[in-house]
Length: 280
Length: 297
Ligand SMILES: Nc1ncnc2c1ncn2[C@@H]1O[C@H](COP(=O)(O)OP(=O)(O)OP(=O)(O)O)[C@@H](O)[C@H]1O
Ligand SMILES: [Mg+2]
Image (tube, rainbow over all chains, first blue to last red; front, top):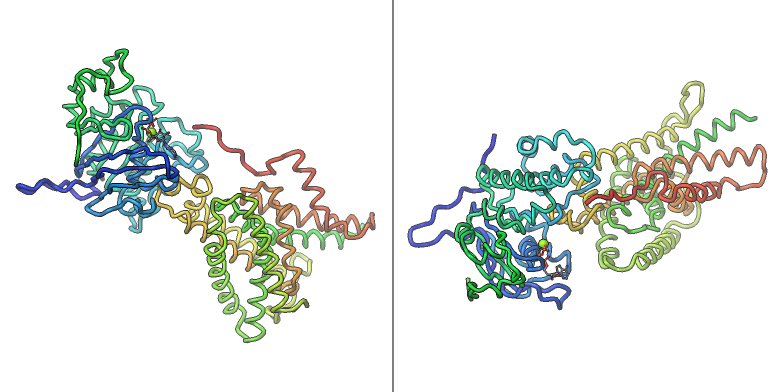
């Protein structure tokens, strides 16, 4: 029943690294024409990967996702420098609904459930941009992943936080995207549910080949499923590497994985941290 | 007690009320989707009816062909109105938008009077038999058609919002525009679609009234009757709008009956709905079916 929606991950051609699915190059984002939030942020997401984007509150993680999905426009924000390339084409400045059609789907912070509709109606909406006739098949597949949603026939607004998160992920799958942007899926969930949600994220990545960019406060959970991670602070990436490297990194341990100290305010204050200039 | 008159007025109330319901429904459609209070709703009936009348009488087009052309025209008209007039106003204060729709209402009324005159004009006869006998009641064919068309449009609207993907998209847009956009919905297109559907549905109601009575500038009063219906039903509820319309239609006719039998104040029925409206709003400020938001994050 499960099958890959996205193209299989490309094997690197000898000598040339495979083209990443998404590359964000040195972007600057401004809200309301004056509030500078991203100051030259770059990142790359390989096809088929799960990449974690970590950082403190207000670092600009959600802004980064909105810059990719185009939702920035709905908040009077704009990419004023740099570029966002998806599948080799520039997508910065394009309307969000057109970006969905190209294959990027954002699961917004707070889940973005349409509260006055049923879960099934929410799922159907996920397939809004599709023209093929396999929507029903995918609906069955999604309900296979989240059997609990089938039993909830009332309004989606009355679902529990965990159920809403599953609905939001399921709805993203209904669009058959190549890339899903997830903004803090663990928010407000009990540790047990966080585990469940991350297991599902890993499963859909493996089974369906969907590439995932995962924004998280819960670094431990995120790095347990991601292959790569970026750490951002004040609108810039300050550290990146494989998930393993990041897990073993002293600063990350101290700052995010509960090494708890009194100096946790900023990365810059950490002793072993050396700021790296990055030009992608 | 004049039973004959009472029954007649109740039947009348249902027929007119169903039409009020249809117009109220198309008003709520625009309000829900794009948060615009459309004071030019009644003029949609007027324009639709005149255009259809003109095609039928001047060009002798058969009724259904004329109707089809009228609806296509109204579709284009609704979209054009949204794109040219309303779209530039997105983000402006509600009161400015209201002023604009009031202005549109005046402009359309004036234009229709200028083009088609002030006199009521009958539609060419459409039905072969003038009336049919149902359970001993003589009912005019045109009235039956009116109820049938109203019910069909209500059922169509229910299907649209419940089962079609554009209906779901419109509900999502009404709920939260940013969420809608995150799902790949173009909010601009949804607004245009809401205006198009609303204009078409209202025009159908306009033609129906034209066929039952005649076409005249008075048709736009349907747009005013919409307000008590819609506020009664709750501004954002389609079902409420339909029931509100029915209630207003019945109230008018019951008031008419009470007045002609007992009170003899004259013209009481014209304003009765507004009294009832005030009383109901004092008891239920959200209307009978208006929703408060689900408080849950
Ligand atoms: N629509 C907006 N208009 C103006 N400023 C904004 C807007 N959205 C975000 N900001 C500002 O941009 C900065 C980054 O916000 P963003 O939401 O991207 O952070 P975040 O990393 O997602 O934080 P959190 O972990 O709390 O979700 C903050 O200082 C915030 O105040
Ligand atoms: Mg955020």
